[in-house]
Amino acid sequence: MIFPRDRVTIVGVLNATPDSFSDGGQLFGDAGRVDVDHAVIAAARLVSEGAHVLDIGGESTRPGAKSVPAAIEIDRTAAIIEAIAKRFDVPLSIDTRKSEVARAALSAGATIVNDVSGLRFDPKLAETVSEADAALILGHLRGTPETMQVDPHFDDVSREVADELAESVSIAHRAGLSDDRLAVDPGIGFGKRLEDNLELLAHPGALRERLGLPVLVGPSRKGFLGSLTGDPVEGRDGATAAACAVAVFAGADAVRVHDVAAAVRAVAVASALRAARKEGLA
Image 1 (cartoon, rainbow, N blue to C red):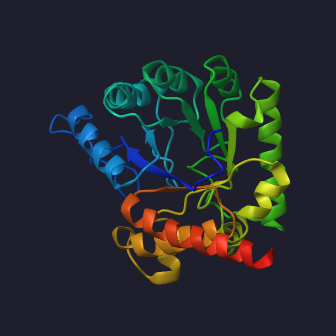
Image 2 (cartoon, rainbow, N blue to C red):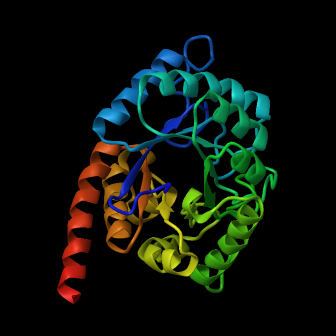
């Protein structure tokens, strides 16, 4: 199973991009290219802090970001994935919307594809994942990163996100992907208003119950946390840990974060409280 039921999975973020909203450019060397050695060091830190999975991306999906050619994504990510896969016994995920990028990453050693578009950008991606016997995370996103925050609107965000993710799951099923190779992500910060993000974070268990699949949430350092706290992006790790704890208590199966060490501690407390609540209801 992509996210085992006996734990909350910590997914550590490794962005090989020059323009991601919180850590863009950190893996780039003086020549303006991704430095594989820097990436391996960063991966080692995330693994030592407790990451169960590493999610590697070569295209920023921050609000307003423009799509980059697949060849650039591959250039930024394939060598990193190959180097990390040889050194660490930890599953690697490629954060991409493109089948061509996914194919190169899976060949290099990735075993999971994290598609924030839920197969709406490139429907061929499902077949690529199926053929590689890999796993797929289906994210929720209306539009593209460039347009998603232009007047987003929901009448019933929980129902609409669940309905649209169900459509993504159906596409994956038709490509031959079974439920044990699938997970869903409600797309926190992806074309959502503050109130939408809060409702989705507060009810991941309902999404899991509706779709019958593990739920990943990714609130890490996102703008809605800044709206609540007033903190700049580099100061949002405390708020991220709080959001992860609430989501886990409410039923999330996995969290995607930049600060793994803080998330491990938040998840430990939230998991214990979730278990205590279930025992109290027995």
